[in-house]
Length: 187
Image (cartoon, one colour):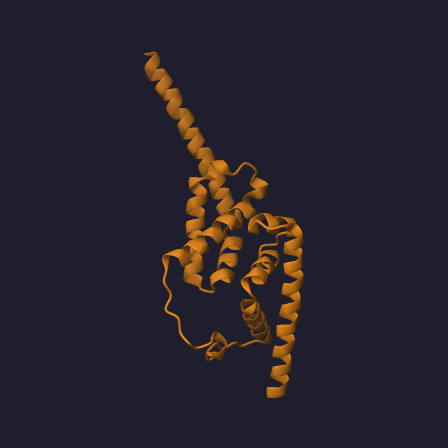
């Protein structure tokens, strides 16, 4: 009789723990899915791959949710998982490389508004930045992270991150200025 009662209590406790974990997880997904997808899209530039990386990130987060001690750190924790997932993608895949430079490919994007064109140009110029400058810039602009948080995510010194952000902004400004000058000379 006591064995049955203990089993019922144990089952009830397990169910409550699982329900609590599910609620916490659902809350994280609702709050951070859009931000994670946006960051994944910026990393890979492909909607379907970004969806896959985001989904895999949340799957891994579910498996190790107990390791997240502070919910305030959830976004940085998930971004770190997402970055690792993106890196795993390159470990698994062998790419066919072409001798054609990406900048020489024809632009078949038809944009209808000036804002869309400007956004496209900025995105294209950000993509031209070296990864060491692009990644902290994207984390700051898209992710809304502070220099300290970016340092934690990228496992770098805060001063290194701030220097990279400064250089990224300067390089981006130069690239956009060149694009603007090129556009005026062609127009």
